[in-house]
Length: 72
Image: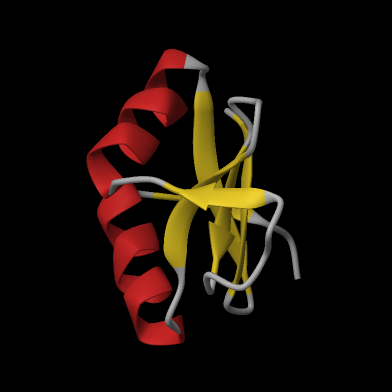
């Protein structure tokens, strides 16, 4: 199944349903989703996550329930 770009609010709904939270890779602006048990990630707010997405020309893509942050 191909990855498709999804609206930010849909990404939030999927994340909530899977117990995921927004995060940045420590020391970078790379964005990922986390369950909170990865020491290389620092959780961030949904607002900061969304702002960084748009500032960097990124969007959330989804396929079969798997989400990934990618360039638009």
